[in-house]
Image 1 (spheres, each protein chain N blue to C red):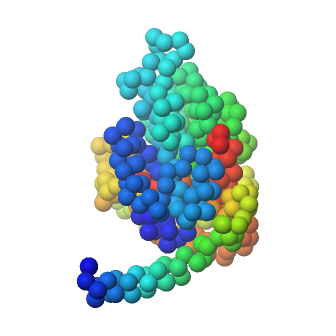
Image 2: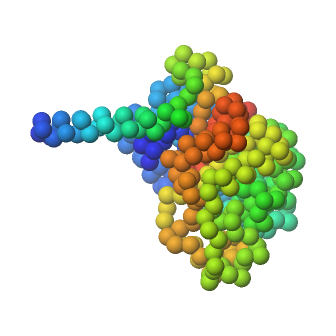
Amino acid sequence: MVDKYKRNRADVWLLDGPHTIPKFSRALEFLDTEPSRITLCRSHKEILAAKRAGKVAMVFGWQDSIALEEEYGNDWRDHKPPLTNLRAWYELGLRVAGLQYNMANQFGGGCLDPTVALTIQGKYLVAQMQELGILVDCGGHIGEQTSLDIIAMARRPVVCTHSNVLALNDNPRCTSDRVIEGIAKTGGVFGVTAMDCFMTWSRKDAPKAMTGPFPPRAGVARYVDEIDYLKRLVGVDHIGLGPDFINDIEPIDPSNSIEFPPEMTYVQTPTLKLIEGFENVDGLGNVRDELVHRSYTPEEIAKIFGGNWMRVYREAWNS
Amino acid sequence: MQRRDFLKAGVGGAALSMAQAAIGAENAPKTDAASASDEELAQNFVVISVDG
């Protein structure tokens, strides 16, 4: 894995991070196996230092904040003000966090509950995250109304770490223009996933989720169509790569899943497909070639490939 | 490791390094990481937002 990053000059790996101490410990032990090539970074300065040292910078992020729910030892009721464990997670290295993963929780709505608002607990968390210096995720897995509420109260840039454009494909995992525009107004970035079904499968396809026919895989050109759209909508300063590469093999069966319903995906084995030509970090060159083909300047490509993320990290973190 | 194996691994490793360097060249930063200012360096990053 680190080889692929090194081979393709990829500098920062935002990990879909662990929610428990044992899993966090496993992640740290993984980093310990290659201390000369990869390191955990907790600040913008540490990322710069890692690059200067020739190391891949790993950043820990969460795709939902389940670890801050009541049942995981956070005191939301008895203590005034509430006592969450966010401070400890921050100290462990958490620097990016979404509140929901597709479904609603006590903090607000997931993308499958788009009308659910950010709850009072969710508002408390967003404020606490921005105070501590944790970059808040919205759009994508997070519901539209909850995302708009996050944007409305943001005092620092917020982002969508990985999603696609709803206006180009009506899939519930994609993000509406008004959320994308809201993210841009905070100074944030929208990361574009390379997840095939979010660009090729839509709500109207739901009845054939188990039987097919299934759409042909999209390619890098379709991926860059997303970037073209975003450039027109919010400008190149608010676009980033958010491929959402998958390393765990888990079959997708929408017939018995609430989290991955037929409106979102069709049955896929061994796991969710990524687009052809950008299945992993080795596809970076293909994306670059397509951007060059479409007359993106070197400066624009540098922003999309990482310059914009680095700007947001600097502004959203405290160091 | 026996010397023969060591040499074999060494040659193979060098070939792999050369191949990898060629693949990565197109993503190579335009700025020298050692001498660039923080601001210049930050413009030459490749960030992968979410990898399992």
